[in-house]
Amino acid sequence: MIDFTRPRLGKEELDAVADVFDSGWVGYGPRSGAFEAEFAEHLGVPPEQVLFLNSATAGTFLAFELLGLGEGDEVVMPAISFNSGPNATLSCGARPVFCEVDPWTLNPAAADVEQAITPRTKAVLVLHYGGHPGHIAEIAELCARRGLALVEDASCAVASRAAGRAAGTFGDMAVWSFDTMKTLVTGDGGMLRVRDPELARRARRLSYHGLAQPADGFTPPPWKTWAFEQREIARRLLGNDLTAAIGSVQLRRLPEFVARRKELAARYDERLRDLDGVRLPPPVPAGHESSHYLYWVKVHRDVRDDVARRLHEAGIPASYRYGPLHRVEVYGVDCRLPKSDAAADETLCLPLHQGLDDQDVDRVASCLRDIIGS
Ligand SMILES: *Cc1c(COP(=O)(O)O)cnc(C)c1O
Image (cartoon, rainbow, N blue to C red):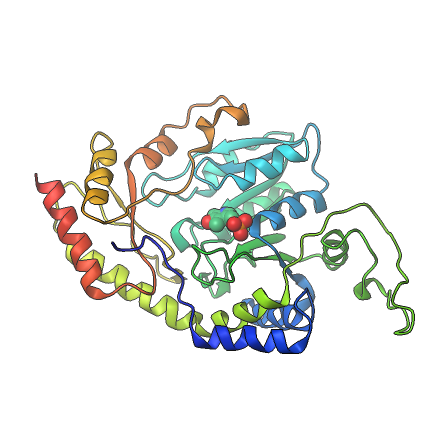
């Protein structure tokens, strides 16, 4: 059985974890700070902007809290998004408004986002489908022009770049996920980036019980470690030094991971190029770099589920990401989004991870060829 996704973790990560054991401190501490600094350097932003959390979802909830979203506010996001977006929106009393995506790229154009904006819109949340940056620069420009906050869900886009800038640096805030299915893995874990320095300081407080932090100028003398200043009411959302140590190693290996994924995606392209009834993913536009997080093909909606079933029977897991969220009843949104429906009903993601062999790709491709041909 081929894995749909599988992290690449080895001796280097184990050694890093052993060092944390030896250090006598496994909670959020020096290794977390080091991982934040390394990740900030990877993005090309100041380290103060970056905060290591226990998940991207925690970061999304925190981002919306920092933006002060509440009753009467709306957040625009593509219907092809992960559930954490509307969950975070509704949890703070605001309303998600879903916009269309291009049914081939599964990313929204700036015009798709703009169509969903109303006088109540306060923020826009977008991801970079499959690792392709999409129209992120145009969407950032739109948000700036309309006075809206932009939050990037860069969970697919840990190594993606557009016009010389890292995905996740276009918005006012961004989150990354390092969960077990991602390109860079820490077990559970996520990063939050906050551009505004005051909000970034507040993010640190809100991620640790609302207590004043060194960044707030609060550093009690070492002989009085019990001193605290409760500034506001909050939860605990931080990552820890065990997962951070894994993250540091994975970040060093990231270029190798992405290069391998790029090779495998090109091999799928080559093996499936002339197959009628299967549309390959769009090429990465000039000036963009993708993390190659997903490899997705389009097949006719009448056969998509059956193709997935027959691949599964052949020991090949195919899947689909994300949503469609406008059809999720508990979100209470009633709208017609035919392009998003097409995206959700015609897309199939094939196995793609840095641990796949060339032969695995060949097997998936030839199996898909047999199924489509019959
Ligand atoms: C994985 C993923 C998330 C959730 O990440 P967690 O770290 O598990 O909270 C959010 N958005 C997207 C696009 C994802 O792929």
